[in-house]
View: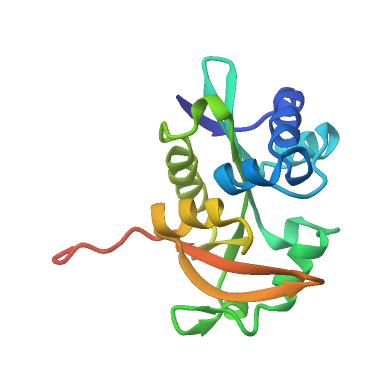
Length: 190
């Protein structure tokens, strides 16, 4: 599996993957089992994100196995409502005892893995690629997960060890905010 930055030519495959896993395209049972993504990410939006260097992909010899967004908040001039709500909540969210507002961070997500690749380490590979890409750019990668998306919470908090930072609400939806340090854990004696 090749974990790399997305390019404009990946846009159609990314849009198809995103659409197939969108909240509105799945049944309630599918959402509970596999999780879901939300937002308006069509081919044009994804192409622009790829050209801006804010998407990573898992490429299995030309087949798109997954994608992950990784962007600086400053790179989102027209942030969607959940991102704006997260940015507005920075003062109440805590990273290692400090308000998130005082910590350099990158936005992590959306993340989606193709059905044929689930359970095969693709999410973990994308996460590791994101950590490498974020190193030196920020202290923490921050994601928001709709609390109804228990599958995503399990992958990111239980599986990848992301740390809960707090919550925010937007309309009738509650979101948990999680973070992961971009700095390698120090080893005693180093």
